[in-house]
Length: 248
Image (cartoon, rainbow, N blue to C red; front, side, top):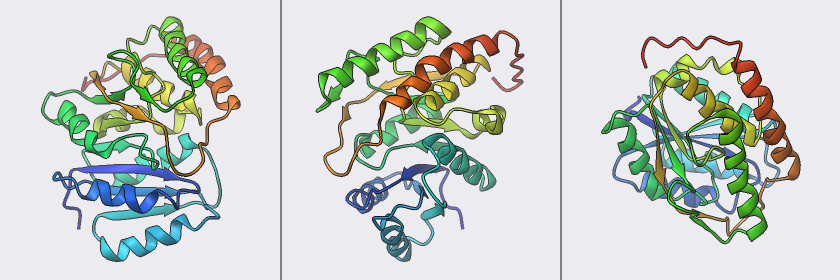
């Protein structure tokens, strides 16, 4: 039986070092979030850990198991569709590795539930550069990637590639999830850009991003390449598309 209005979607691939701790941290919050793990066939046994925890949290912890590593964007799309079928009102994206602090979830929730926004973003760059333990080269690449996206698209968001996000269900119902094409960083950009074009209210909530301590990062140069070239295509195609939203 669904007893919460909010669910946190956590994609996983080889996160055995982090998954139990992140689940317990989210469940330790007062609000009572549910969790959906979208598990991409991790060979390290991540799914086994989640299955054991489901015995402890049978009503709150859910899992989709996929056959292999199919991309971050497709993992979130699968999670979004699952959540929409179950009437959650607030649907979150969050990493498994504690780079996103679970204690910030209530702040993102409040930005939508209490303040009336449709999308809230845990932003690394809305109040300076709030990143801990990243190599300087990666910080600069991420920061200027967001600047580049703003320049090309006109998107008034400082952290366009952020993966710590809360969506109201109406946003995800409006966006036509099957039309979202990108899989890596460009997926995060496309989601925010499309929500903005539909006129949804978006707020950036300042957070501190802390680089993972356990496990291995899934970032690579091809993901950034998709984002760099993808935004040009995104902007060009938007010039010929009508964004009609009767709820915004």
